[in-house]
Length: 412
Image (cartoon, rainbow, N blue to C red):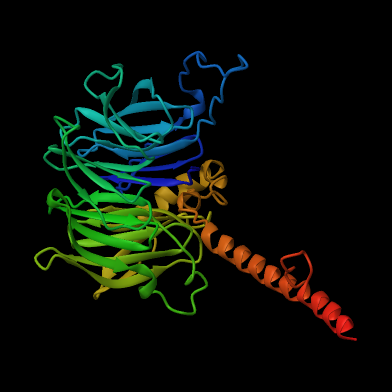
């Protein structure tokens, strides 16, 4: 799966990534203009040990950042790249702590709530844990699926590890004994693209899928509470109204209880209100943009930050005004970060045409039975037509028409 540009926020720390690079800045409107940049192509690489059957080294990867995240407190930041590396940073101040090798290319990662471990999910369906306190320690296999993993999350009390895979399943496993499965959340009809445990309602889980739905779960018992069908929220005139799409990001704002949903390749963000007592999601509105939206993230004090493919205005800040979400005029914080992004736009240019790759995850159906029955019907029709043209022979190998001709001549 290719990776487009990404956005991560924790407190006032903001990270924008693109290609093999990322930059970190502060959203504070003060004069503090410190900027940290990092390029994975300059990171430490282990000597190529794996070789193919022909004895030549296997693909080394492109150094493109595949996934990244902050720890809960914002003290740590971690990323994985296409060269199968896990890179850990301290953020106060910014410093690279370690570069470790993972077994396979990763699709998602998350910190435990205690910030003692990083959990990394990969394409083969495995989850490995890496120590934060021992930044050079090797990874430990925690659990595995029979299908590609697309996301991983932990409960706020670190008791459960939740994993989402390509085969429509969400698994809830005990963290201390991952082989012990607490429940499955079943109901999606396509791959599960994103999951999010609601921070201030730790018993609730949000999930999105290639089946164009956003679902709310009570995950410990695998019980679906509510399902939103996204195509029913679209206007008929919209050009993507009949397209399949999956959510590439679920964001939650505890201050207002809002859920923001970004869908792959659609310049639109859906806004929902979480009604926890009523165990449902209430649709509020759509935020439309003229350019492709790469990522979204909430900041508790300011609102929704939107990263889009526009060099003049790469970041947009949205807030609720009189009950309606709308973009706000550029303030000092937005101007400062946008200036940094314009100065480093080269790292984002490659994301303009990049695709998150969800299109290749849909199930392909092959209806061989219908084709077989159609061919069989044609064959039977051809046989019947042939019988009408050539009547069946009698007991002595003669047709009825020939025998009748012989009988008439004998009478004469």
